[in-house]
Amino acid sequence: MDALWMVLLLVVPALLLTSSTFVFYFKKCFYVGYMMILGIVAMPLCILKSGGRDIENMRIIRNLVRHVKYFLGLRFEVSGWEHLQTEGPYVIISNHQSSLDVLGMMEVLPDRCSMIAKKELIYAGTVGMVCWLGGIVFINRKKTSDAKSVMADAAKTMQDEKIRLWVFPEGTRNQKGDLLPFKKGAFHLAVQAQAPIIPIVFSSYRSFYLTKEKEFKSGSITLKILPKIETKGLTTDDVATLTDQAYDIMRSAFLEMSGPAPLLSNGPSKH
Ligand SMILES: CCCCCCCCCCCCCCC(=O)SCCNC(=O)CCNC(=O)[C@H](O)C(C)(C)COP(=O)(O)OP(=O)(O)OC[C@H]1O[C@@H](n2cnc3c(N)ncnc32)[C@H](O)[C@@H]1OP(=O)(O)O
Ligand SMILES: CCCCCCCC/C=C\CCCCCCCC(=O)OC[C@@H](O)COP(=O)(O)O
Image (cartoon, rainbow, N blue to C red):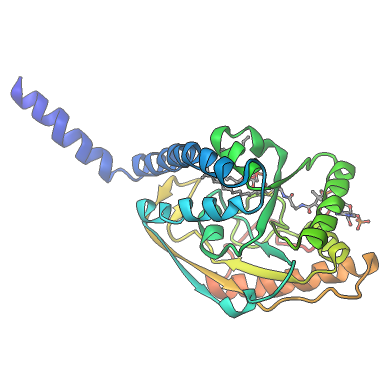
C-alpha cells in the first residue's frame, strides 16, 4: 500500500512535470488564474486611488503585472527606449501573438497610456473590470461604424487629456510567423488626433510557445521600439499610405528579429 502511495505522490507528478502538454496547460491555467487574482487586488487599489475609471490606474496595473513573467519563465529584452521619450499624446502600435503580450506591454507601457480592446474583454471577470478601471477603450469589431465613432471620440480625448493609446493593428491574435495585414483604425486614430505613431515589434514566440503543439517553455522575447512616424498635417487621404508604411517597417523588423516566416499556404498580402 505504501509503495502505491509512493508511486502516486512522487512518480505521477514527476511524469506530469516532464510532459510538455501538461506544462502547457498548467502554465496557461496559472496565467489566467493568477491574472484574475491580481485583478481582485487591483480593483480596490484603483478605486481608492482614482475613485473609478481613470487612465492613472494603469500605473497600478503595470506595477502589479510586471513580476508575472518570472513565474512563466519569460524574459524581455527591450531596445529603442529613446523612441518612447516623446512628450504628449501618441498611438503605439504592435503585433499581437497571444494574451501573453500583456506582459510585454507592461514592461514598456508609458505613463498615461491605455489600450483599444475588443468589447468582449470587459466580460473577462476581474481582468475585464480592471481593464475598464484602467480606461481601456472597448470597440465592437463586428460593427465598423460603432468602432469608428468610439475611436473618433478617443482621438478627441487623446488631444484634450494628453493620453496615449496602444492599438493592435492586426485586429486579432496571430501566430502565423508573419504579420497579418493591418486594419486602418489605428492610423485614422493617429491622424484624427494629429499624434505620432510609435511602432513596437514583439519577436516571434515560436521558440517557446506553440499553441497547436501544446508547448510552453521558458523563453526570451525581444521588444523593439521603432522611431516614431509623424502624422502632423496628414488627412484621411493619407491613411492608406501611412498604413502601408507602418506595415512595411514593422514586418521587416519582425522578420529580422524572428527569422523568416514558416511556409504558409497563402502568403501575406497587405490589405
Ligand atoms: C491586474 C490584472 C489585470 C490585467 C489587465 C491588463 C490589461 C491588458 C489589456 C490588453 C488589451 C489587449 C486587447 C487586444 C485586442 O482586443 S485586439 C482586438 C481589438 N482591436 C482592434 O481590432 C484594433 C484594430 N482594428 C481596427 O483598427 C479596425 O480598423 C476597426 C476600427 C475595428 C474596424 O474594423 P474593420 O472594418 O474590419 O477594419 P478596416 O480597417 O478594414 O476598416 C474598414 C473601413 O473603415 C475605415 N475606418 C476604420 N477605422 C476608422 C476610423 N477610426 N475612422 C474612420 N474610418 C475608419 C477604413 O479606412 C476602411 O475604409 P476604406 O477601405 O479605407 O475606405
Ligand atoms: C471573452 C473574453 C476575452 C478573453 C479573455 C480571457 C480571460 C483572460 C484572463 C487573463 C489573461 C490576462 C490577460 C488578458 C488580456 C487578454 C487580451 C487579449 O489577448 O485579448 C484577445 C484579443 O486581443 C484578440 O482576440 P481574438 O484573437 O480576436 O479572439
